Image 1 (cartoon, rainbow, N blue to C red):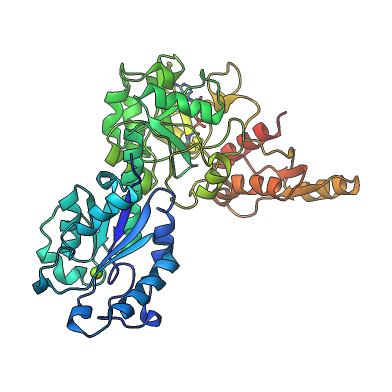
Image 2 (spheres, protein in one colour; image 1 turned 90 degrees about the vertical axis):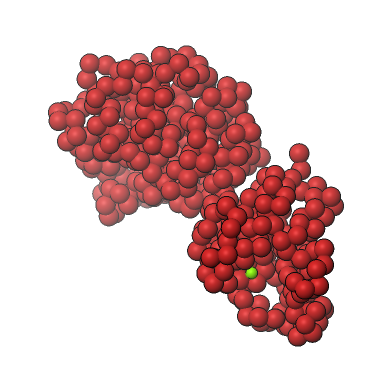
Length: 467
Ligand code: TXA
Ligand code: MG
């Protein structure tokens, strides 16, 4: 199978459309172009296909058009630029929407057109994609708004290149899952390492990559509450209420599993963990995919969970087929896991939905049942740990104790959370990772108050401190 590619239109898509541009200094990148392309670079080769009819009209020379191409290609690391210098009346064989250049890229660079995309601000860009069985994204930048009424080809329509890149990335993540691949994806809590939940071989690869024991079950991520009955059986009313109240959001419900859930996902248990994540890119990926995505956090077993795409790349690069980059996770600690298979709901892992909010919805106290029998990986007493030793203290004592350790010759630092519990949760894992990156061998952490999100933070810190 060849590499997938993205064929970008130049004027009005990558750079501002200023008519015939004769000089590279006149080429102005659209806002967000660099970031947009950065999200896709690992998975796609980039090409530009551009009609430069000014050459035939003699308003610019071919050399001038090509000097502008060269500057854009260099700045954006584009593999090849295909330029048609003719006018529509010339009826040449390479002018868009004729697929001449796409076929050439297929032949000369082994591009897999079926997994490729065309992005442009003219209906001919969408027709170009359709002509070779590729997909298109139509941008309303440049002349996109003006020509929109002429757009007859089915394709995604977005405002600008950043949204185009996001759409392609989410669809590519779904394609990768469908092909049995592993995708790291953002959620509102932490990044997940996902596989098609119904593909046992793909699910087993997750355990291999994470180094996680196969008996520790995975959460199945779905696109909406409507999937409850497809993945669980004998769903109690309280589960429907919690889904309506907290999904999409950081709540995982443990329910009796439906027959389609393979043993590889549940570790052979008769229950399944289900969750609808709130990150828009996770939801878009799940909608494109259509099925369930089994995913633990995208870190090696026992280590600190990743809350940025860079964390994931640092931990797992080479072992994942695609990293869907959705920026920093908003919540920063994992979902709350609620067991709904017993007589009464119980919290197995405190997380992004607070105990207080859960109790308000359930209408009575919900006990926290961590520790005891180890049913879940996140319930092992040692977990979420940086390489440095973690020592817990009250917020006031943390820095003085770190200073005392330094006086004894240890490379010690401290973490004290100021501000809200939400801010503390958001920065927790990044702060623990920085301890390792800074070369410290011990960190003294001030444990916050256990109300609200503080309960989840304190839980993670106790596990990180346990050796
Ligand atoms: O926020 C989250 O929950 C993140 C994101 C990626 O969704 N996921 C996550 O997955 O933290 P993981 O695998 O690192 O932790 C999930 C926990 C594990 O402790 C697992 O054993 C438990 O959920 N779990 C999954 N299915 C279960 C089941 N059927 N019964 C009991 N525990 C279960
Ligand atoms: Mg254009």
